[in-house]
Image (cartoon, rainbow, N blue to C red; front, side, top):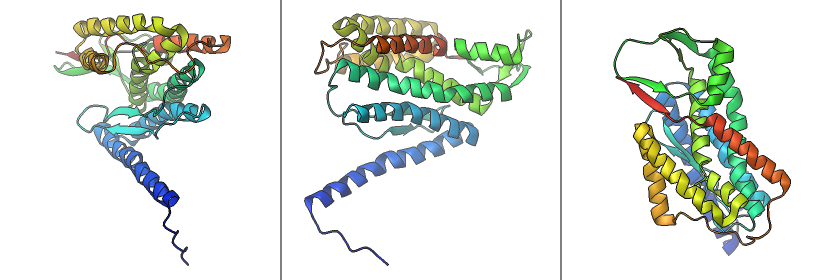
Length: 283
């Protein structure tokens, strides 16, 4: 039994166009599932990282829907040639923010949703990780430990002896990458998530924070080569999009006390997820 074909109307054409657009994020999701599985060689990592990234972007997506702000579905970014197998995920917001409250809610929903999702993967990954002697060989890749990651590892494995280190389980590596992505997104710069929050809280004064964040990232690139890519990306964003965040339609109504409390929680999440030296190669 088959359904009769729909009559050819403008609405039908629009629906088919929208369905065609949906194929792009769906295809990118499956490509990212493949690239993340192959990158680390573990389905544990692929499932965990897809859920963490997906929670972050769908946090933004559903907050946009709540405030009637037009946006796309999440676009996952496969990258098979790098260690993580992905560059993360993004959504595109297709109209101005209606208010500071909407700007704040949409900006903060992603980091909080992603952070809540990565927590059980981080704990389980650390529990399943092994403490082994550091190999005596050059070219060893060492991951910087965010404060929260270090705190949980201390509880689970205790103080490590000299020459010992934790060989992270793939699920823990997914949580580590999720924490790195969360910290980078919460930098108070331009139109990053942290830039949205900074403007929602401080208004036009947030431009000073953006300049400070850019200067800090450039300075960190001299401490660790792993910051160079971020410094370049922020510099490009500053050049093409400017250092100032665009104002929402309602730029005068301040945030409620509850949202300011959530902003403080976001700062704590940033502190817990941040590491000044994400990657080190031990030569």
